[in-house]
Image: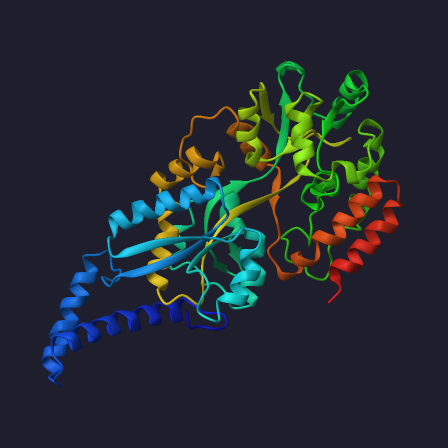
Length: 428
C-alpha cells in the first residue's frame, strides 16, 4: 500500500504493468542470477503467459485484506472470499472487521501506513470525500457498472465523470405495515390516510406509525416536498443545501404537525431498536425503515408487508427518500490494484448477488430475480428516491439536520431551525 493522492485509471493501469513486470523479473532472478537479458526476457514472457491464464491476475501468492461490518455481511465476504480463492488459488481473501460507517475515516488513517484494506465497504455518499482525499481508485472499466447494475446504483457511484466502487446492494427505506392490524386493501397511501388510521388505532402505548424522527436519513420524506433535494437537483451544489427552501419549510411544518399522532419526545424515538421493538410487538402498526430490518421482522414471526411511502398532503406520488448503494471500494494504497478490482467486481456477479441476498436480505444491485415478497415494495419506492449526495459537503449535513429534526419535532420554530441547519451545513 504505497500510493497517495487521487489516482487515475491510467496510473492504475501503469501500476499493474509495473507489478507484472516486477513479478517476471523476480521469477527470472530466482531461476538465474546472471545478467543474460535473453533469458530474463524469455522468463518474463513465460510469466506473462501464466498470468494471462490466470485471468490476467498475478500468479504470485498474495493476500487481499477486506473490510466489512460484522454479522451477515461478514458471512458474505468470508464465503465470497472462499469462492474467489477456489477460482484463483494463489489469492487469499482476509476479512477484517471495520464497520461500514467507519471505513471511510479508517482508510485515511491506515492506508498511507500500508496497513489498511485493499477493498472496503462504504456507503456511496462517502465517495466524494474519499476521492478528494485520494483514498480510492475509479473502476477499471465503466462497462462493469454501466448497464450492469440498477440505475439508482449507477448514479450513486458516479462522481466527477468517473465511477468509484462496485455497488453490492441497493438501498432505500419504505413503509412496513402489520398485516394483522391493517388489511392490505386499507394500507395508507397518503399521510392523511396515516392520520385517519392513527386517530382510530392510537391508545396509550400504541401508535399508528413509528420511525426515528431524529434521524436525518429520513428527512427527505418531508424536506423533499415539491421535488426539493439536498444540494439541488443533481446533488452537487455545495453552495446551497436547499434545506431552508420554501418547500423544505412546508414539508417540515407538516412533520411537526404530525407530532399529535406520535406524541412522544424525539429523544424517545431516536433509537432504531426501540422503533423496531414497537413494530414487532404490535404497539406500532406501521414503521418506516429499510431492508436491513426485514430479517428481524421475519424472525419475530409477525405478518408484515412492505410498500412505498405515503404521499405528502397535496402530492399524488409517494414521498421522497434517500437512495444509496453499499459499495466495495478499491483502496488507492493497495499493492494489488488489478486483483483488488477483480475481487470487488466478483461481488456483483450473479452468483455472488444471489449469495448476498440469501445471507443478508439486502436489495440486489443487479437485475437478478429473487424470491421475496418484500423487494417489490422497496423497488417501488426507489422510483421516488434520489441518491444521497456524495460531494464532500454531505459530511456537514447529518448532525445539523439531526438537531433540526429533533428540535422541530419538539416544538421549535421550523424556519429558524432550518436556517441554522443550512448555515451549519455550508460552514467551511
